[in-house]
Structures are given as C-alpha cells and as structure tokens.
Length: 169
View: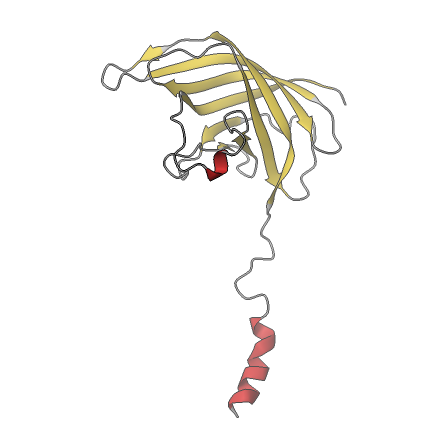
C-alpha cells in the first residue's frame, strides 16, 4: 500500500524545488572603461580612506550579436588614502539567458552588491534593472582562484553611472 502512495506522489515531486521562471545569468559582453579626470575627491579623517569620483569613457563589446556601444559616465571608489591613477578597468557583463544586446542596454547606475562575501570583489548590480550585473576582470590574476590568501585591494569600486554616447547600430 505504501508503494502505491509513493507511485501516486512521484509525478508531483518532479520539478519540486525548481522555479521554472528562474533566469540564470550568462555573459552578454565585456565593458572596458578608461578612467579620466577626478570629479571631486573627499577624505575621511576617521578612517583615512579616500572617496573618489572619476569620469570615464567605456566601450561595450557584445559577446554575440549586437552593436558595439560607447558610454560616458562616472565611477565612485574608496581607496586606502591614495588617488586612483588613470587606468583601464574591465567588467564581464552578465544578464539573464535570452537577453539581447539592444542599444542602451547598460545605461543606468550600478552599485556594489552588499551581499558579496568579505574579502571578495563585489559585483556591480544595476539599480534600474538588477538582472544586469558587472563582474570585474581586471583584478583577477591567473591562478588566483586557488590562492589561499588574496592580495589586499588597492581600491574598491562602490558605484558607476553609464550613459549611452554612441552605438554602431
């Protein structure tokens, strides 16, 4: 009798615990940004950490179909008392499966994910569309995933804002 109940309940168990509407993230492209002049640096007297805002010029290259785009924007960061040099930053752009690279896809403000574990570089999450996330590529060195101790970060990006400047579509 117990087997009959199990056979009756078995079809209802398939798919239990899965959300058919779940949208797994996939890589949709790479965002490369060059930092430019400082907007207005600020120093915290209590912690010695510097908060800095910089202008930047970015290029988004889709992984598949879609136009290459140019964005202008700003970056906010915190560093250990030093200002950021002019440098390039790379982010892998992730979005739900099926997301098409349409013009202006990245145009929004992104903030560091507060749920990131301590000691890890937080991805940047879109504020208007939180399905779009930016994951740093520039601070990962070959073999760093297996390192026991990770090097201390010289700075942390806390937010960026992107505005579409041009699209090749």
